[in-house]
Length: 160
Image 1: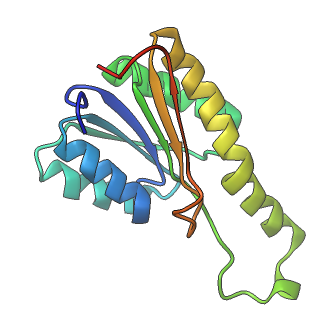
Image 2: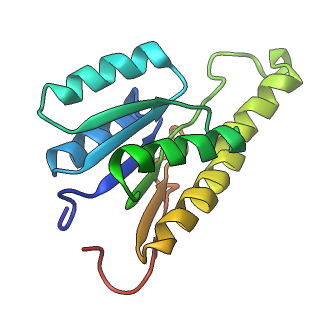
């Protein structure tokens, strides 16, 4: 993880799982961490764990499927840390343990909004902001699908 120290990383789904692992690795590499999750209590616990490592961490309770909230969150992160350099889009939900015929349409819509639409929305909005400064790296990790990742880098040359 070269050239990470002092960079600002947006990490969604940061309260647990892959998102927390990514936030932890970036924090250990010296990045400023903007931990984003919809679960405020879990986010506070995760922040405390990273803060104990001496990391510069802030939390932002946000719903990645809400474009307006995403804009507000991005602005709040930039106000706190400055430009966002790294976007790790890890938020995801599942309906494991629920029989297919028992899943209401509204729950399916929620899964699609978070796991598919939000990935695009986060990348679009935050990469645009990152791209304005010349460089951004994005990564999307759907839940329970570590092989299904996309990583895009915007701008010329390696991130410095």
